[in-house]
Figure: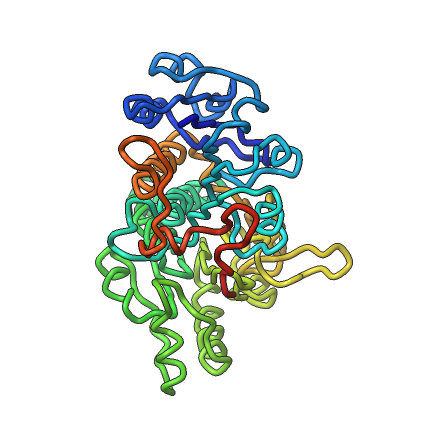
Length: 385
């Protein structure tokens, strides 16, 4: 099969969907691999690395014209026009975007959105959300430490003792847990909050204190249990109690990293403006949900994140607090982010390609069925919000 690896064109995107490591494996399986010139340059994978393992270099039209196209993001309309009907597309295709899904179907593509893979043990090796969130959580702490005007660890010097930074992590999914681990390595004192009581043990095992908000109803307990490994929207009664606790702890924190996202829904507001106003001058907030929250400015349509003051892809100063709204932290570690993502794709393709290299879509496979977004000219899977 002819596999195409185009360059990513989305703003601030530095990742690539295949590395020389995975291209070598595709070639050894008998596939013909075409890589767009310069596709891996921003991730420190020069063209020579691809040609050395058997890939051919070509322009965008040739790579998008392949039988199987591997992407990080869904193709832009102009790129989509370069793809042939009946081709296969695999990547992070934003399955909750109905308009984009419709375009893929109208282009006659068989498209697989890997974000829709079930959160099961069997799917771990191809879980793109986890692999990239892990990197985002790590980078969030480094970004925060670079903007924080003090030391992270406690230091005892001849001039006196410097207290350790207090870090508050909101959301203990993959990104949050990695943020806890990274902040701990840097010597910070850490507290963490999450709606799911099951993560308390994980939080504490990494050296953080769990901020517990007790449940007062069965409805709250059921919502906190989540579904498919993801959190669900919590009842207003619980959110009010959590908000009060987060407000008090944020006032004491030096750094807050918020990671709360609910697939297909607006990110919950965890750090309202009043809380930011109450925080200490010089504090830092890193909002991993920036741009995916509720509309914070009706005049411009700007969306906040877990904090309504966040501005997508900007660092702003509000009430003496530095608020970071980078929307693609994984791309700030492009070499490793690309390597992990490329391995995710490699493992996924084992489910839909035979040893002879032919396409075999087995919808009896729960992973294949969940990720199959469009097939030919029809929407194969309507992802529920």
